[in-house]
Length: 557
Image (tube, rainbow, N blue to C red; front, side, top):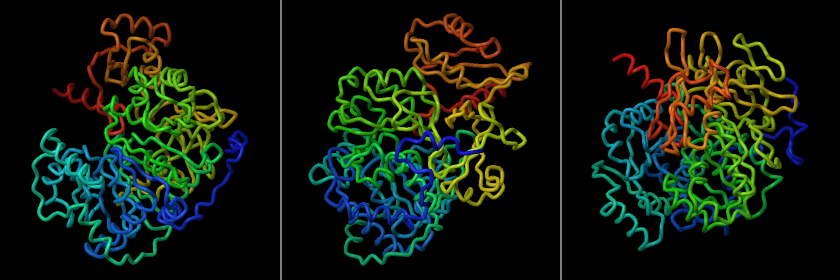
């Protein structure tokens, strides 16, 4: 397909980037720490770490991994932490040591944790003490030889570090009793590493930087092999996109966990490139606490998922914040609903724009031009050096405005799934990654996601896309959240909606009446179930798969 989207790029955004402009992510870090040494890099819990301190601490961490733990080039090290200052220190330290970072969701169950640690073959792990109980039970079944344990306050100044750790452990009871022997305190790693000689390893673009496990929304999690060149390419692609609108004093709000690929690339790595201050939100579900942090900083950029933006908008104090510095608001991970985007623009005066990516593409594929004034319902334009194609079920290329599976090609595409050649062959076709998302592209190059291929519902031979039904239902004032799936029926499948009420007086009859007005008959839900909560991923994405699994389980009883 001809790159018709390039002519709609914002002025200053190039058609191509150089994926080899840095040899590794380490060079991006080192350059930022030189250029912005005195500037604040990360802040969390009212304490800020400068770029100079980041350079020193990551070097000490890397020196310890190599000098004391004797890890070898390419060994895997797991990170099991929320957004705290220790995360960037450990993550960059792992990369600087020539090792591979494996991000782990700290809320994993023991089964999920064991599967990922065994599959990745991690030799060491950095874990927050709050989650050691889960780790403790699976350690004997893994290849881990070294456990580094940190507490929330470890990088805060004394006596605040002591007080926060003491309160979390003994007052809030957030740190369970655990016994891992031997283990290494995080503070000891930095103290010892600071006096070791750091022998900088040679790290090339072909070396693996991350084993980034997929969120598992469509099945078992798989480790996407992302090299330094993959990550550098995507950093450059994202940087080229934001360059026309960023200045010298950027402040980005990082509420999505850094162990998630969206936040890792967009917030941590890309904004590192411009010397930004990254405000780490440890618990974004604490909306009042989150808003207090937002009040403290004249933030210029924020990323999130639809559910996060909705939660902020629903709190009365959010509208009272000062948004005069805000220039970039990006939603990803799931579809941004028009009603949320409209409310966001009304309150902040800044459009909430969609971006799109995959774990398998490091992740960015499409972003809306940042000079747009309004939400447009699309995921944007393919970014620099990126090819896309809309394909039929037989792999044939479709035309403009025709529906098919979205395929992506570019320097950000993964090498494959870790030790899963058969799974890799299903997704990678001659350099193209088959996304599993159903999409269209219009005459201006804007891409719209219709739905996940596996989420599509087949009703008497007619295709129903859950996103469409959810968007219609979400427009009702009495609806807080909605998820739509297909459940088995005599005709194949029927549409079922799970709804959380905002207005307790809302009835099924009112919902059905609204749906019959807005949808053709076969798209209207045949079942409606009211719930107090919906299953969600670690970043707040509603998990339709979990609802389908639940339905199948109930049918089997």
